[in-house]
Length: 175
Image (tube, rainbow, N blue to C red; front, side):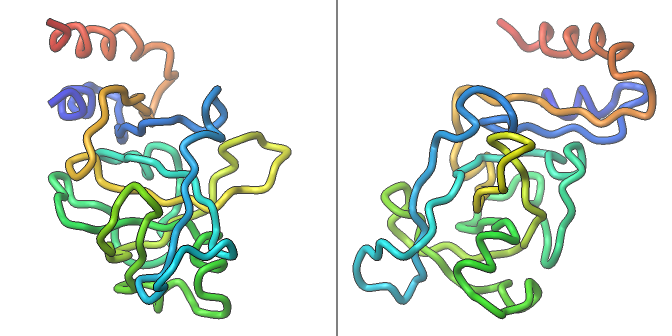
């Protein structure tokens, strides 16, 4: 509801949300290990990933490109994930992003059952512009709701001019 309200504001190109914004304190946290569905035991050679929960047009608002597949549907509740290009390259060396779609992985201790990769997105320098991107995995907000999300907005005008209207949209829902 909040994202719909923000998206309807004049000058907003896209709006989304994420549980941990890149380049903020805690951006390095919430890491977990990812396994292939076929792994029968915990393997230390599998990558540790940033675990992110995304909603709305987060990827468009942040300018994160889709390399293959699709993004989450608005009310996505399926057991699906998006993986960063870096994660895909670590899990499936030499495999093009388009062939990563439909593969299944397990997310450490957070999700016991395997989930399907529906999209591969660009890498993000979450911990610092001077640091290499860490592999990332994104799950739909409707599947894994969290209490705190940060809104991101891409505008067609000076962003500061929209701040009062965005605050008003938040205040409408702040009971």
